[in-house]
Image (cartoon, rainbow, N blue to C red):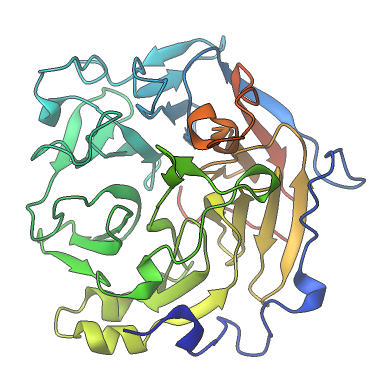
Length: 385
């Protein structure tokens, strides 16, 4: 098995040297303020008690957010529609938002870790199927659920057997282009590839070091994030597709970033050993909360150890976008047609149970917020409607 240090460090722009001194941004723990020239933060929505880690904005302006069932947030409605008056309405209803212990997990939302939209009219929810304290989800609890944004009707409810999702596996996030769905699996570390037309499904890169966390996740003050006193492990996590669909970008939560050709990833005739040789090292990213990508190939990074959003450009440089003390824990971001970047603030670096011994357990600030900024000219439009 190749380690990240032994992989050929080929950038996705062969003419650019990645990670050069000119591209690096200072990681100072000092106070954060508004830098001159950065976009202005606009408050979009607030959640008084429930944590959110995703945001979807449809072309007609309707907004939805996913709310995971994490420690201290067990009473979550899981998915909400954000109303024009700022109120939060559980969605899609029909019992999906009201799970109680003992109820059928296949027909309820349990722990929504991602929410997205790829066609402008249907939502996809990634349900990890677990509640705090559980080591693994019961059969059928982990699922990828597609539902209509108008009626709430469930269109697909995908779950897989232990050959694809063995004990300890956890869905993390997904991307869709054409007939193909790609999902990161962060419990054990792998990429799940599913054909929406044929139902063919594969578990890929399960033995690759590139889907495994090989260094600690860092939060505020470069503190290691912990769970139950042990360093937290989140294997394959952020995921993006290139604008042409030819490359899948992925990384463990703590980095670094890699990419692999989607054609080879989808082809069952390509062995795991051969697929490993096609992986390209992209950038030595820090610990990330969430990402987004535009139609020009700019990858937007929500950093975890500082309250900052940066941009990895197609020429291989890392550019500053904004930083502000309200941006601790920028999670899965969303770009709209009018080129606004929406940022849900999960406050993961502030969560008391991730601080560990000697950590500051008084960092969490309510309410949870979602902000947006108008994107600068060098960043383009979203990949999807």
